[in-house]
Image (cartoon, rainbow, N blue to C red; front, side):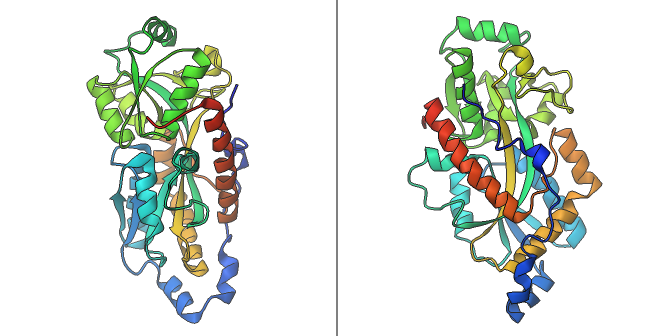
Length: 335
């Protein structure tokens, strides 16, 4: 069976972030050093490649609020959804490399090279990796009016109605999509895939009953689960989420190889000066220590990553390679 565990179960590998890009300071021109010393001297734009209400947005907004609190400068969220998150990535890749446009991407952007053959950007060549922001398990959530009972009853319902039930995703080629395809593969079921322009719109339709289920990241589903608008039947992996201890994990339910997580990261456009990169990383590290951020992340079953920029870059490279193998093995295709 194909395992979808992010390279090396990264929670155990998070190392203390530090001066990964600071070595470039000594070689930086005086004007660049002056720019870095003043950063942020004006509002910073954070391109989020999905609409509001999705997982990426759910982590970006608390970061924006905390950034303003710590620096006195706005971190402006620019939601650019479409094409499984690749539209926003394309826009961000072409932004001025001055430290005032950043990109909040996710695991979807490590999957995209294997799903979208004609991307006009390269996540490894056109961006500079800065920080791993969060890592959360995937969760199977259903509309409680459409799907009643526990996981066992749900699975029986799906098997009794091949092709009649459906699942929404954040778009073709996203982790939501591949999580659904892997579930179908491992349970030998057929569920119709309905791609959206982001997890936010998909969740709205799930709550309305237009779709039956989602294989979502906890970051975007947590609040709706707690509010009773959707019901969680299973979290991926071999252990329960501390944020939802009553929800069984996949291994408990007979799916030991169903391990899917969604991670989120921060990049700058290629060409951003090294000393400006270092200032950004410094502020991100400071932001990650705030009690508000720790509380918000914990409520979503996440923790803030502690990889250096170099470690995050190596992580992304490994993810691109690994997801290429997963896509090939699963046979996943754009709808």
